[in-house]
Amino acid sequence: MTLIDAITSQVAELATLRRDLHAHPELCFQEHRTADMVAAKLADWGIPVHRGLGTTGVVGIIKGGTSDRAIGLRADMDALPMAEANTFSHASTYPGKMHACGHDGHTAMLLAAAQYLATHRNFDGTVYLIFQPAEEGGGGAREMIKDGLFERFPMEAVFGLHNWPGMQVGQFAASPGPVMASSNEFKITLHGKGGHAAMPHNALDPVPVACQLVQGFQTIVSRNLKPIDAGVISVTMIHTGEATNVIPNHCELQGTVRTFSLEVLDLIEQRMRVMTEHTCAAHGLSADFEFQRNYPPTINAAKEAEFCRQVMASIVGSENALTQEPTMGAEDFSYMLLAKPGCYAFIANGDGDHRDMGHGGGPCMLHNPSYDFNDNLLPLGATYWVRLAERWFYQKQ
Image 1 (cartoon, rainbow, N blue to C red):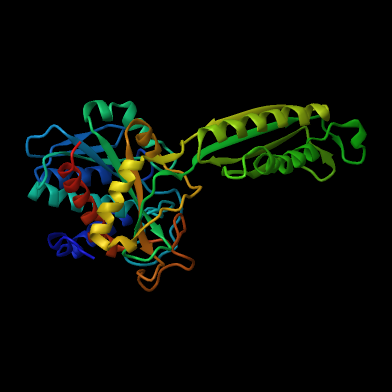
Image 2 (image 1 turned 90 degrees about the vertical axis):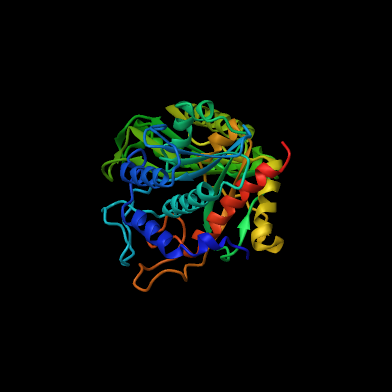
């Protein structure tokens, strides 16, 4: 492993910064303290700062040489609305809020890279440091783009990095094509006619129809999609009824749909809608069908993904620059990749052995109440960002 000495020597300082962020988590579009800290650090290092894109976003600008070429490096800043189980000294001080996905570490790694890049400027071009709010459901990337991110800061490509528990520390992963899924939600309300549970013939019961739909939706994946196409339909909520002896008027189904392509998403939505309408009609019911498309699939460009693998291999060896296994989780960096070529990669977070004694029980997985970012990654992730920027401008356009 070949790390940058100037960054490695600052591990203790970086860990202190990261743990301060962990102790003060802020939810989407509320990252005021975090954004203030980021902006202050960048200003201290002589980096021009622009604020306010996507409400609380921060963009730093580091110029080296005379070239007008530019790239963007993105880190997310927000936390999750969940209680932390950890009891270590840097556990969340804000009840019901927690950095359970490692955005505190992502922010710290990019800050460490920013300090080095600003000090050395060993590249010919411009690096835009994108500190993004509201990845956890708020679509902060989309909002920054709406506010003119790519018009105000023109760039050739954009890159993101996320920690990944379960992989051995010292490993990275990057691959072309879809690496994270689209995230979508549905709400289906079945309208029947209530009545006495002892006299179902006088009612139009929505409950058995809802059960048919829950089962039927799974045939969309098994019988309508090509076997090589991936899709997940999960009914996660069923709300109906108020008493055991009353057939309800209504039944509500809610859940999520995940796909790696918009074509598969189109098919699933269309089949769910038709199945709902016809199944309800067959039983004399009506239905309201709502389908909300949230994050699109995250699809890496082939050229940029291969470039990132080369950067990773130069740091940790080709044997530790792994193929990125796609996941059905979603990520709003997908909006940036719709607008610009780029690559969203993983950095290994280990198996949880890095956590101090006294942490909460349970695995150190993303969105888990006993998760904590591995501070050993800080110099590794920062080195990756630096080498990516330097190497990008050495290659011909």
